[in-house]
Image 1 (tube, rainbow, N blue to C red):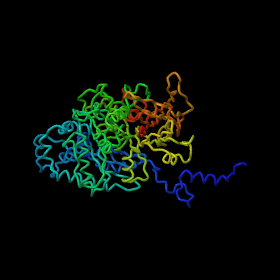
Image 2 (image 1 turned 120 degrees about the vertical axis):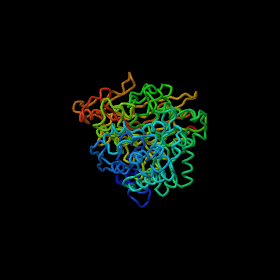
Image 3 (image 1 turned 180 degrees about the vertical axis):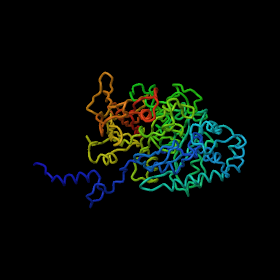
Image 4 (image 1 turned 90 degrees about the vertical axis):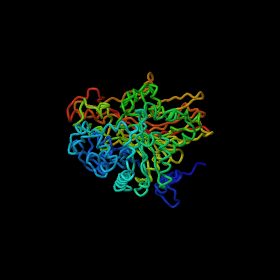
Length: 626
């Protein structure tokens, strides 16, 4: 007897119901009661305005946090260099994270604000640092070179008697203004503004900075004063302070470590700051407060390093690896594993095996670290890090705050968050569960799921996302052991930024630990554009080519792909070995920002790369054996 054939429309409807995409028995619409995140939002969680000490010292005298929010929402502002600036597309969210250390005071000192000059701190500074810079000076270079208190930037963690005279009432007034401004620009469903600040800790000049993001309104946030590195440069002390914040106010906060490439191995170290061993309590506290980390920004990319990943042809990207953040201690290769995210993720697997918890199971985001009040991460609209490195001001020989050359700055990055809606609650919840990813400036849309029972070719189903959430976990999730499964399967979809370059390829990067305790990594090229293949001699894809016209500073999207998708099962899976997997989407080449500068302002950035392949890094999915 042959099986009964149902009408096509009825079959399709039943298929929808079997997928769980229409939860109501009386509903036909496939979107009802599917509460998983359907939207990705792009923003910046690391930006400075003119009340940050270093930003003000380096020429950002006028642009406030309100200007920063206006610019991020798509409004036109006048940059410190006098040029009009505007984003082609607004951001979805922003946190202005000014340094807690001397927050607002450099500007108040410059304009002789009586709220400061009347205090012991103001009187101490006035006696120590004279003459003060001309508040009417507009040339950023002269402002920076004439500002006598820039030395404070490099002495935040040093004992200083004037530091202790920073009165709480002044700190409270400045902090209230920060929180009030964020509330003013927060528009649920349209644009999210988070109150935040930067904890600017350094150890021997090495970067331990964190951005602190609060979910809460002014009324809640101002029940507590920011905990700064002037109180302690130990992250564990910061976490304790954030515990007190939540207990005192009933609010919620997160700490986001900066890109680790300038930490000389301290960001993801194998010991505590004082040299003690890491233990389970440390690991659990770190993951409670720091579920995500910034891995790309203006000061270089921290995904991986060529010496750590010698078989990775894309490891050489916007690399800063010669010194720590203060340019005081030279970086040596033994420091790299604690400075780069992929190695830190592997280190976390090893630590979990010995201490019972993983302190480095973090999701990945990007942000800018701009100090201009302008969140710019685009190659053709990049305003630099400080006011004295903005377009038309920077030159082939100019250097960022006397440190790295301006041409070494990277136009990066953005934080991408999958969430149900563009609100503080939804975005914050997504960050806590690590359903986020990093981009180096492009708005690539990236989805990544892992599971044990995905049906064949599910990645091409119109219900791809529903299948991913129903039968697996999204980026940032964890897979527990399945005794009846042979290996996990992963689904990845990447779609190009409509205003940027086509996609070259998508990879899945695996890290794992073997029975001996050694860690390993492997790149799997799961989707290639233009019908390219893997070269059997090298194990790597054929090069995508380039359409870049360096003379005209243009490129065309006649190569590459608009979208790449893949469903991949780990061919070397060992159920006894803990592992992580993350997706990396790479664009085709296009001109780097320094080429646009050359065209519009003259000057030859001879040492700068001339092209760039921007990319996105998903948060990992972890596999843990029972």
